[in-house]
Length: 291
Length: 287
Image (cartoon, rainbow over all chains, first blue to last red; front, top):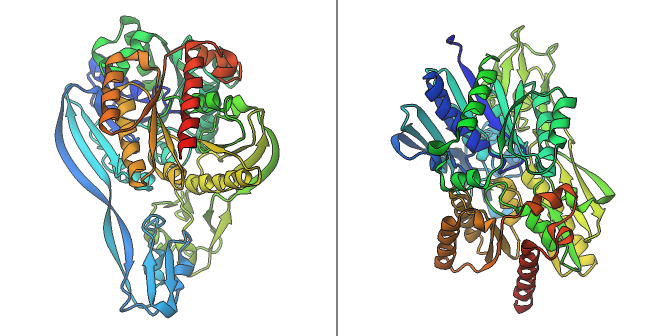
């Protein structure tokens, strides 16, 4: 294979369609079939689950990531309110006659506007915990990095931004496991990806959320293909949709109670049935030829 | 709510919706709303909701001084092929700092109103729901907005309940969904991920001091993890008020655009949902 690097995001509108299953399996099979250097990054920082699928993980590096939130020194502040006027997120409250000036840490986006606005230099930025980024060595010799949002933080997108800085340039393939949905955390995850794998299920909820995710991919001008998970459940409407819109079907993973049970116990990787290995082999081929 | 996506929040919400009388419904999963696929709402009111502003640079006025790029904390400004800075609207958070510091006044903010929210009539009662523009921000504020409307309707109609179908995760739309809620029904899928994610959500809910009740969905997929989940709930003193078996009729009911209680009322999950709702009503009456 040539040495052009490729970033692949695994996304889905609906939660629980099998993003993590697909992301972790691709990570595993890319090494197994092609002996490739692959880096897996769990960008679902609100609910990171990739780690549950590995039987042994060695921690290589762990760091606490902070959000810097400005604090107002009321002994310097003249209560002119310029900062509050500049703050687009309504995070600053100034009550001049009570000499009160405060930044609401849950509303602040850390944009830095107040620091520029303040004529008195009354602001200093203080670190608040945003989450933890951990880099692991997995049992197949490839690395996996996870972002874990601090419970209570509403700044998941900021942590994903920090997490993406950990994407190493010395691997051929980076797999980004995306959070569910179609809003800012998903955009942040897929924004630098060269290709996106959308995982759906053949149910009305799955199809509805796939449609809005396809809309997002088109807006972002991202090339993408679809994996249908839990095939056999629901209806055939998803296939009609894919055909009508000329969307590539990368592969199908059949629904079975046994697969669901293995997934639920985290035993999936060591017990993948033969025909599913073939499915992943073909998905990898289809994705690599997009390089 | 569930933490994990796909645990069955919407199916549970739809099932109890068929049993709840005098109730207002609200779909807080504004990012990937699905409840309307079962509710088939007749939209009565449509509202726009601002998804904030995005910066736009006028290349005619720009002197390429680089100040905007230097000040942008969201890495949203990059030079185009001609070397003139350009804003990536998907990375711009609309803080307007670039607009304010640009010495040439070359930057303007454009308002985006790609988010819509609706008030609808449904066979279960009034529904407040939303549709976010793809890739938009402000999902937390949109949740707050539609919940406010749901409370207003509940007040006007003297409703007994507001049932909110929650979003997955623990981030801003979830925080907006938990704030000011009376009770949380935690839908847990018996998998390592389902339990792990439920625990993180619980940590968040506990910080709000809101009473939590739990239901295990698809409990027979993994009896061992179901047992672990039950032990965990017991240790946390969280009442387990329902155990729903895995049944493909849940998917079939979704395909038919119905709740499971409507589609297969006498099935095992149908009976289980009825008992779940009776318990929730009792909890409410005891208050």
